[in-house]
Image (cartoon, rainbow, N blue to C red; front, side, top):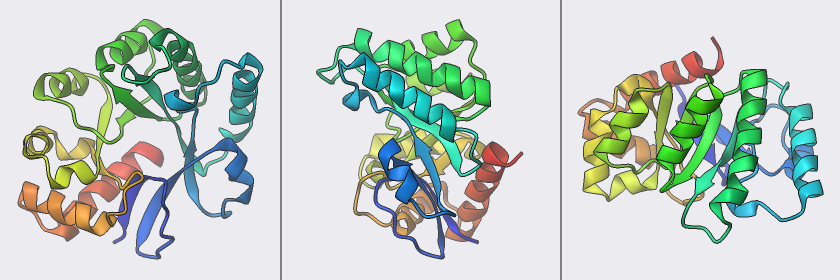
Length: 219
């Protein structure tokens, strides 16, 4: 059974790993025919050019019907970034509306913005699943998110942050994924640590995450 890396910017193209590559729109045409990917406008990359943003969504809608595009995103809200939140919100909403229409899960980037994201999701009645990538929330935030159809993807921080390891143990295993994001740490190492935290074998963890992957994308 293969390792699943739900979110990476540094693909290894290994026959032992299923990778979901995060792409810029302009990179999709050169991406291998069988590769799985996600596309979205990251909140850090939002410009003041409304025509450019509009073009992004026109092109995203052309791609979204492809089965290889598994998720919309990463997209979301980041209250620590210089781009003001009121500029980020309309772009995030546009992603959600598109994902809802085409029934695609959404890969979420969130920094100090979980309450905002939940509020927007509820207001728009978005029912497609959210995957919070690079998750490092606290217990209160985690409990809040578990009331919704939310998945949690953990990356390199799981190796070193004890409080995050404790949170990881509390989340039902049918809601977890693992990722490398833009780190140089191998996905196998992240699985090793995650399995140790859960006191299960790596092979058992691979089964769990493969089941989650199938449930989310292929049912």
